[in-house]
Length: 256
Image (spheres, rainbow, N blue to C red):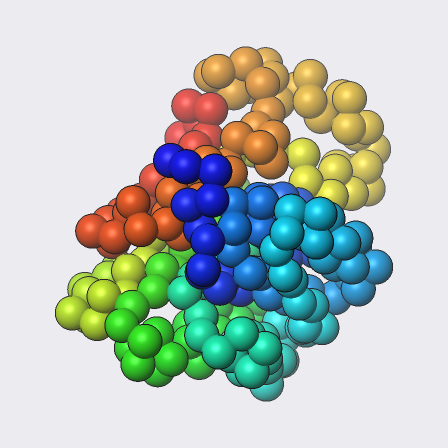
């Protein structure tokens, strides 16, 4: 792929102020796209926007609380208002609290499903019409190996990622004729801000986490944000124009 394979494209990223979402937003801009970052960390977003300017690209931040359907709609609407189209939508935002089936409370369940699935549903709903009108677009969901059953202490999270995979297949089956494609990128065990904070709350440092994960993962190390970027650029580019309904695994060999 060329250095500017995303030139001319407009891509919105939900959860674009943290982790892989932020790295992806910056990489999309480096590859030529105009990028709209949806999230809550305004300071982080503006650091990314300043970086995008150095790439000769343009970005925009939309303060987005994904527990509010109206904010999900706002992310897409402001993308259209600012740039006139939406070629790509990367749904990254998600939470992974401890939530075993036998003890998960209703509040935790609702929050996991609201952020991990319901927000994705309504972001896509808002984007479908504009994508149909302009002749297509690419939607990428952030998947997880938990979607195939998951670990015992992540029941609600596993369910949210499983139903997101069903939504991906639904979109792929029913909107291919509109040239709207949807794929599911299965991420591996990554030391994002949220993962590191969770483990620290359980008494484990990042260094300890990395050592333990390296002993568990078949390929011997945790995944880094950079491990996903080429795949994400490909999925947003015209090179993947005929790819839809696919599950792409980048997990270091991990199958939960």
